Amino acid sequence: MTGRNMQTRRIAIFGATGSIGINTLDVIGQLGGREAFEITAVTGNANVAALARLAIEHGAAMAVTADESRYSELKQALSGTGIRAAAGTSGLDEAADQGNDVVMAAIVGTAGLAPTLKAAAAGADIALANKECLVSAGPLFMEAVKRGGGMLIPVDSEHSAIFQVFAENQRRALDRVIITASGGPFRAMTLDEMRHVDAATARAHPNWSMGLKISIDSASMFNKALEMIEAQHLFDLAPEQVEVVVHPQSIIHSMVGYADGSILAQLGSPDMRTAIGYALSYPERRPLSVEKLDFARLARLDFEAPDEARFPALRLARLAMERGGLQGAVLNGAKEIALEAFIDGRCGFLEMAEITGAVMEEMRDLPAAAAIEDVFVADGEARRRAAKRVGD
Image (tube, rainbow, N blue to C red):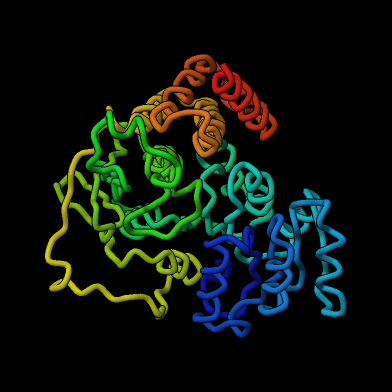
């Protein structure tokens, strides 16, 4: 954060009504509340009632709904509170440019890309929980952070773990990063069994409580595919330096390997507040009310190689990393349409990767993005082509 100390800092929370946003507000309370943080803005989408309640409860100066049609509803909910209401793209842009010391970037999907880029360009430190910023626009986003002069601190548990044990002064000795995956609910299923699962089964994650789409991404390992691409950009890695290992207990959140054979790992209970707390306290470590690890009770930690035949999303991620350009944006856009089709029962579980891979092949020769508009064009075209394949 600006100043890198625990004086009162200005923070905007993008995606305040989601799980990351709600946990961020909980962590802020544990780290000193209003004495430590001045909340400049909270943003949300359709759940205006929850957004207004959070803004009032936590003393935000401004609340923004991304849905312009909900502006009047939000304004009415905040009437008499002194909290300013705003909506749409202009409202999100305003929230991004409030002299923030830190922005929690937790808007889901490509909707979070533009306001997070604006916040980075304005010089805020970015606590990044939005995958699309790096998956779809990695080089543009990293350049915006560099120009703005702030820091980029990952909030995903895997990338936070790597960040915590990544010794920048030992970069020349870096060998690889190892992203851990729980394996999801289908870790032990056969390929044939996986062909017949439905969305209700796919959302039942064994270790984490998450929303529908991210739970299915976990079951298909598309979440790991996105995390591989994120890690490449975040830590400036070659594709071959990014590995994935299945670790069912979700206790080791990720590891970094060095040339001398040493492996450094970050361990902790599966609680997203640990990574959030580290991002908001960095470089300090502040006390949090999270479960402490009891190693005697753990008894064992298991690992296995991921099966790319059953989880082809990992292979697609490596293709995107090797090809570069806009392949990350294409992968993400096509995957989103395939995911919606699976949820609606219009395609099978394994077909999500087949559709995504086919669109990536069709769009493999796109050049690198020169501007954010190029990312949105590639994303839109990938979604259009994926939708056509679902409909065929």
